[in-house]
Image 1 (cartoon, helix red, strand yellow):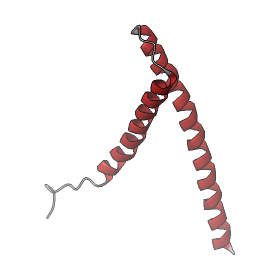
Image 2 (cartoon, rainbow, N blue to C red):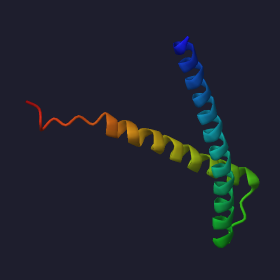
Image 3 (tube, rainbow, N blue to C red):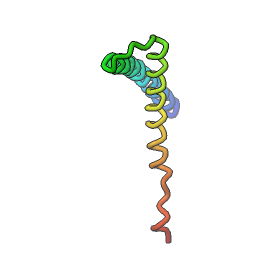
Image 4 (cartoon, one colour):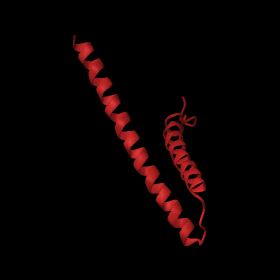
Length: 84
């Protein structure tokens, strides 16, 4: 019975973590759209909404990929110099 409680507890934590990450991704996306639009305005360029969305999407995707690759690269780093 204790394993079942642990399973549902872990499932609940996973669902809440997913929802929080989704909410933060949406908020970040809106902030990036604002930053891209402001940057284009400072540069004197008036891009269409399609290009604003595309550029913001590419920036967010690059940040997500970089955030996922960095920990994986750190965790898989094998220290060859100190092997016996």
